[in-house]
Length: 335
Image 1 (spheres, rainbow, N blue to C red):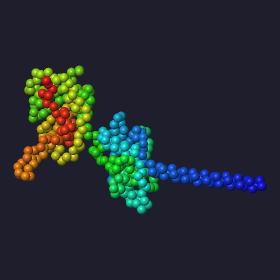
Image 2 (image 1 turned 90 degrees about the vertical axis):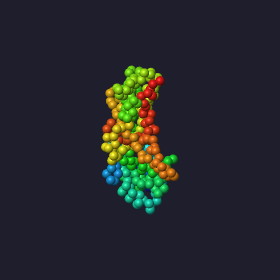
Image 3 (image 1 turned 180 degrees about the horizontal axis):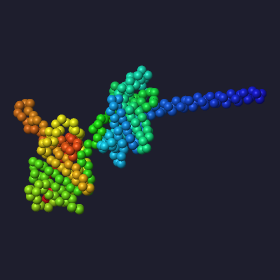
Image 4 (image 1 turned 180 degrees about the vertical axis):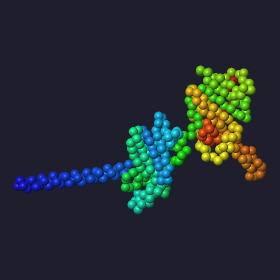
């Protein structure tokens, strides 16, 4: 009887061990499956470097600095582009697991066109790595696969329809900040605005303690005898807080010839540290049109855009409706 009881207890222990082993294997499989299905890194504040590489050798390197992101080690990154990317990184979820028949084509797409994404923390340790491929036929899902995973998935952002790849595959200057002027009014020591073809409208604005002096840009022009309107100088300087270009035109074939032309305006801002930033504005002219009914020539439309030569470095396209706030004339400051 004791022998029978002993064997019974032994079998119970052995059976419990087998069950525990089986359940642990199932837990491992479940954990592995959960890891393969997890793409989001919710705490993007812990991400300090984002590396993106395509299959053709193109690379994007974004690094978090003090209050901004740096692109390619030397350019400020465009906040909207980085925020869109971080939004995708933090909220990507699996939309569905593709049917088995669709997996080979998805894997082929990821292998030939996939973008490899690597996320690093402040110490330089890898947080996560995954691949971003193409989109489903309806453009509402994106092929993605975690590094070292065996299965691809179709992913999405909850509440947003679109191809997530577009948030990752920006190229070169598409990542760059397009800000031309970004000065807080209290940090500006002086501004000069020159209109080479309208000299009487050109001026210099200088800070003298809590007051401002507004003088003609050219010495040959007489100073106004009227007092400066209270608050006008401060109101003008507010316009330099955030002026953003439409885009970069560094590769424009006509850049050199345009730069040699007399500009519409030259604006120089000097900060309290003595650093100057100069932008030359060249108007974009359009040819006169023709009235389709009468056949008569129509006058050329008003200037809506300018090529902006920024400190002799970047060549950008800017809109008059945005930058018009700093194209003041000398007499606009006086009573």
